[in-house]
Amino acid sequence: MEDQSARELAAQALVFIAQEPDRIGRFLALSGVGPSEIRERAQDPVFLAGILDHLLSDEAMLLDFAEWADVDASVVGASRQLLPGATVI
Image (cartoon, rainbow, N blue to C red; front, side):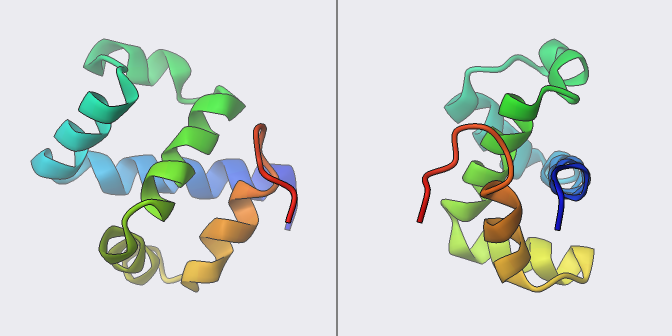
């Protein structure tokens, strides 16, 4: 997997989060990002990393996303490692 694939997965995750009012509300509250900022920041690798961090912090949401996106949940963690601010493991 490469950086571009990780960015694309994070963009998919943003779509997934945005489709449900409770999910997007929680994301906005925790991230401090306003609704008007999302479009501006959607290409920012640090913002995209935060989206994956948000998914990884909630196992139920992570599994729902993995099913929705038809990916293995472990792909989200692997993708996160390719974006800025990842902890080396």
